[in-house]
Amino acid sequence: MPRILLLHTGGTLGMAGGRPSALRPAAFFKTLKSRCPELFRLADIELELFSNLDSSEMQPELWSRLAAHLHRRLPEFDGAVVTHGTDTLAYTASALSFMLPGLPKPVVVTGSQRPLGEIRTDARLNLIDAVLSALQGPPEVSICFDSHLYRGNRTRKVKVSEYDAFESPNCPLLGTLGVDATFAPGLRQKGPFRLREKLEPRVFLLKVFPGLDPALPLALLPHLRGLVLEAYGAGNYPSDPSLGRSLLPLFQEARKRDVPVVVVSQAYRNGVDLTLYESGAAALQEGALSGGDMTPSAALVKLMQGLAYHRNRESLARFIETPIVGEMTERPPAVVETPAKKSRRAR
Image (tube, rainbow, N blue to C red):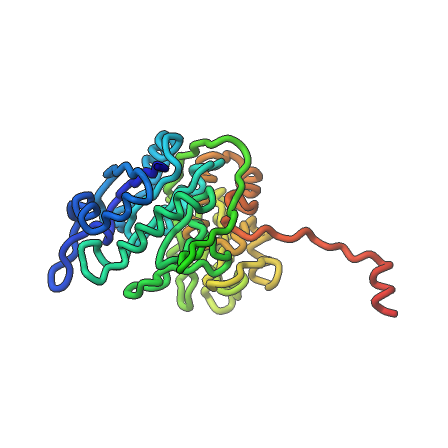
């Protein structure tokens, strides 16, 4: 039989309790074998307890350990499944995608909205679909949830109490697991399978909102190595100094302190274009980096890794603005219109 490594990190899927008492971590492996025995008909599954945490406790240091463990163990298996709580699942999937370049086999992250031990749980189907995706899906880090397979670094949690909890607004599905299971080819990564587990956690994610006092993020800058700014729309933010809440001084001070600022959009679909409006153009002049259509979680983790491995600003800028593992849409090459083309159009 094919071999699958199943790493349990915690989360609702492996918890016990529930209304009226609070959910709590429980003995996952015993419940798994009793509630989902058919899982072991798909593959020879080796179970490992990596951690047993609520996913709100997941931290960069654990991502590094998890990536190192997968890098060491994956060559012995045909694929891996990581069970994880849903709250930070997209962050972990994004982190693993950057930390495991050249990934030769699928690593599928999954979880559930209800514990495995409950009658109306979604955990059982999510686990079965995740194992099947680890056997047949593309060789990249993905998220399997509610019969869909998503690219891990393109996914957002969008619902709290419904089974279709995740979406991938700017990237097509990698797989659909209905009556039949169909999978896209996915990434074909170049180069050897490597481990890049270093991260710089001294970053901050700032969401622009009406009434934001610029003094607050300015006070944070001395403590930061990098900043991700969730701007409006195509990369807009308050920039009129006459209204007293311009964020342009934040970009100027960040440049002085050599703190890179990556701009992403609060909009779920499409991404930023800092050349489109005046405020975006002003941010560009102050050295802001475009996050394109990256999710905020992917941009944050990518910045953490970029700061750990790139020591000069130019190298970091190339890393942030270039697609590495499918986390952003590649920009089409600029088309320069020749005078001949213009004259034909005029005629």
